[in-house]
Structure formats: structure tokens, C-alpha cells
Image 1: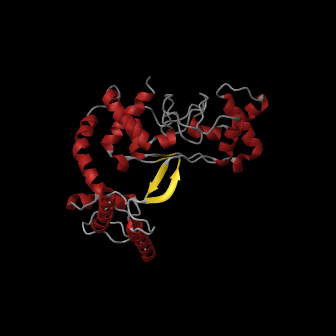
Image 2: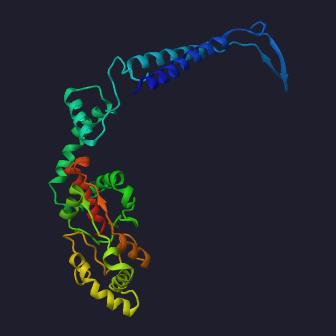
Image 3: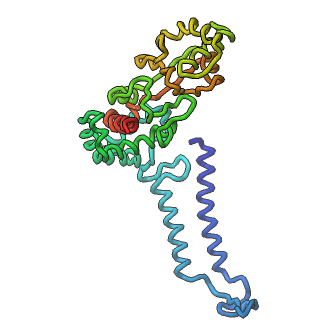
Length: 317
């Protein structure tokens, strides 16, 4: 934190405490010229205002809160760059990467530093790691029948995966697959789902506009849409069939895709980026580059195993 912000926060914090103390003193002082317990000369609806002091218990509580605030600021960080006499910190806020965060976290745990985040992580590891280790011994397909494990996997999914795939795991147009329909780009077995979560995926669909031109793209789009039973212009479809040979290297001559490459099936009318003529044309013109992040470092293999079981279960119902 820069010196400017240190001064700014310090002045505001200490100024607020001093301001509260001054306000209390000003309120306790009798500046009305009316003796305590006497009438202030105001009456409304039969209710007369009396010059009474603030209740003593209320005043003492106010003093206690101010003293407590000062002691807290001395013991814990709260005044800009001042770390507090206890050396406590909520987390390693200075880190700039996941690697730095993991290294700093491990060092804090090993050396017993007063880091709240590190303390909570250590407690969580001691409490939950043995449970996840036991889950990891069970094959994904078998673990998917364990209701307790599925509830754990669901919570991990909502925390880490729902941002892209949705809380119901049904995905959305724009490269976020539906995980409930049993249509898989890289395979839907327990091991393949786990592999996807651990290593991540990087899809790469090249753009073909420069190679085929607008007319060629229109022909390939017509043929591609026909593969899923759509009605298209016959002449465009026949011309596109010949051009589709360039696409068959990934999607196969029958257009059913290749899970080894993550090439989608073009015959089932399930579309990752939208199946309208316009959306398919855009895909062929400019290509697509989807990225599924790896969660091995974020969650660890044992937790990934449980998430894989949950995801697997979604497409089995």
C-alpha cells in the first residue's frame, strides 16, 4: 500500500474515533442554560421536553466501544500499511499469481504464521482431506451412486463450474457445453471427465473464409445443416459435400465428430455456439477457440474426482 493510502486511511479512521469522542463530550455538556431535570419549554400533544442527560450506562458503552476500537487498531491491521502488533493478516494480498499464492500459503501453514486464510485452509485439510481421499479410492462411475458424495460434488461444482455451465449444468451458447445430455466432445466416461477437469481443454476450430470465400462457406453451411436433418438448398448441399472433405479431417466423413480431438458431432443437432444458419456461418468464417481451464491445482485430484462423479451422474438420469 502506498504512503498516500496509508495516510488517507489512518486520518479517516483516527479522525472518526476522535470525532465520536468530541460529539459525546459536546452532547454531555449542558449548553441550554436550563438546569438538569427542568423543562425546556417545549410541549407537544401533552408531552413536555425535559433537560435530561444521556443515560450513564449508554455513555459508558460509548466510551468502551471507542477504547475497544483503539485497542483493535493497535493489535490488528487497520491503519493503512501498519500490520498490527499481533502480526495477523487475513490473507497474502501481495501475491500476483496462483503459484505465488500457493507458495505463500504453504509457507504460512508450515511456519504457523498468524494468517487467517492459512489457518482455515489447514483446519479444512485436516478435517476434509481424509474424506476426499476415501472418495478417491472409488471409481467415478461407482462413486456417482453415492448420494453423500454427489452432494459434496454438487457444492464444488456450484463454486467452481456453475459460472460457465450454469447452476443446472445445462450450459449456454458461446462455448459452454450442456453436461446433462450425454453429448460429449472428449468423451463422457468417468475417466475422460476427470481427465478434462484435471488437464483442461483447448478447442481450436480454424476459420475458413479465406480458404473457401463466401460462396464456399455458404455451400459448406448448407451441407453441415443437412447432416442433422435440416432442409436446405439441394444445389448448395451437393456443392458443400465436396468441400466438406476439408472438415472431415476432424469431424469425419460422416460428420459424427472425433472425441480424440474434441471435434463435435454435426449430425445430432446439438450446437455449442448455436445451430442457426447465421451462427454456423460465423463459426466457419472466423473459427472458434474454446478454453476449459484445468482444475488440478485449484481443487486437487481428490476433489476433482468427486466433481467428476457428480458431472457423470448428471447425464445418467
